[in-house]
Amino acid sequence: MQWLQHCENLLSRYPHIVAAIESLSTFAAVITSLVLAGMAQRSNRTKLEADGFIGEVHSEAVDPKTHPRYLVVSITNTGLLPLRIPYGFFYFKIPLRRALSGVLPLDSTGAERYLPRRTYPVPLASRTTEPFYITTEERLYAEFEKLWKIEPKWRKPLFRFMGGLVVTDDGRRFKVTLTRDIQQKILGINSSAG
Image 1 (spheres, one colour):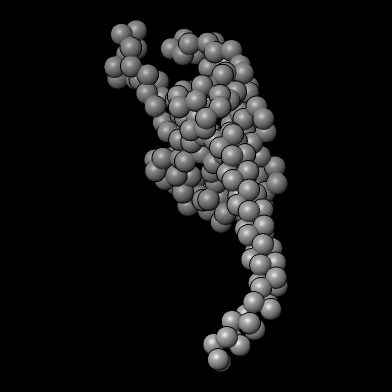
Image 2 (cartoon, rainbow, N blue to C red):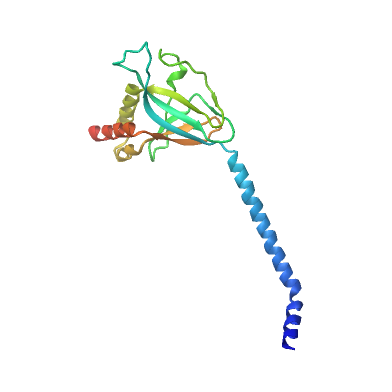
């Protein structure tokens, strides 16, 4: 007879148990829908990967001993939607410095005879890569030295952490991964100008 009392006791609490399960399942459904909406919105954001390196131009018109060398930023659109690269898209960023040092792309002017002229903004379809010629190697390192001279002494140790930044047409910012030879040159300026 004790089991009958136990069943009767459980059945008397049945409406409360059902209400608790209903509230937990409603809460779980709301959380699931919020997570799925966030994931859907995230997939529509601008996404890109950018690498900065020193590249040479090889052509029959160029003397093989003196290949022109440029800072090239290779941008890959890793998102699902196309994006646009504006005219002033590349910046150098020094940690703890609010101002960015912008560098206008060299391939927009048509002044370099080995580089094709490009009109901006440049559309970049999904899953495509495009190289952008920013400046000559000599001008790049002269700009590094100029930045070094204007930095206050307390910020100069942070100069070795300087990096690149790409800003898209919709205002999103992305880090540019600089190659080791560019980073070594920054460190060389840091140690030689000490």
